[in-house]
Length: 210
Ligand code: B1M
Image (cartoon, rainbow, N blue to C red; front, side, top):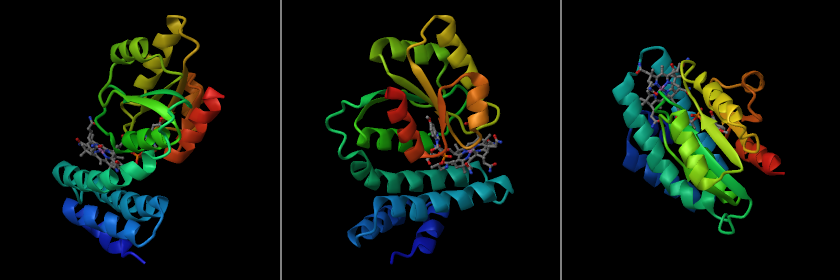
């Protein structure tokens, strides 16, 4: 059994190389991607989040922990995206909304959607409605997924949904997610659904492309 407590501690301390190696070792020991992701990486990041909230950790330390998390995710990426070669399930445009720089959760959603066969265009963080619209014009997505981690940026999701609807672009579906997002908020802003985590986000995308 991998020592997930140690892996969480290494992530907390931002030891990217150790996290990367432990992720490889856990997979080599036959542990599932889901287990390694949830118990090794996400669990470590939750402790970071708690200590960040209580001013035990500050932005620089959290950034370093995020880098370690990404090192582990890079090992998992080929496995999470495997099986998506046909890319015929649907087209997904993903971005984190304006003012928000958090991208770890969004990246996971993108990887898992790719693994489910979606063609994914990730436009990155801090994206304005103009950027979503320009990318949608070019990529012609079935679903637009938006991520927000801050209570101050989640309201921008409504700006994007309203902007598309105001132009009569009703055929594209909107899926939203991120730590402060709920189904109630999705209903409130007229989004087509909410994903609590990356795998329920993919279930939602599949449902939306019907
Ligand atoms: Co920030 N941060 N942060 N941060 N940060 C939070 C979000 C916070 C909750 C921490 C805390 O106080 N406990 C808090 C927000 C409080 C609030 O708004 N109520 C916070 C704050 C305050 C801030 C700053 C304002 C701090 C400051 O500067 N004083 C600042 C804002 C910067 C900005 O964006 N403008 C800031 C900065 C940062 C870093 C840059 C240091 C770093 C981000 C690095 C990066 O992403 N590249 C960071 C981090 C790492 C966090 C925490 C610790 C971890 C987030 C994370 O990656 N989690 C976070 C604490 C927390 O969330 N508990 C925190 C792991 C990830 C797998 O989970 O992102 O939730 P998550 O994604 C999940 C689901 O939410 C869902 O699926 C994912 C996988 O299961 N999901 C979707 C996400 N997006 C989806 C989209 C979908 C569907 C599902 O679309 C359909």
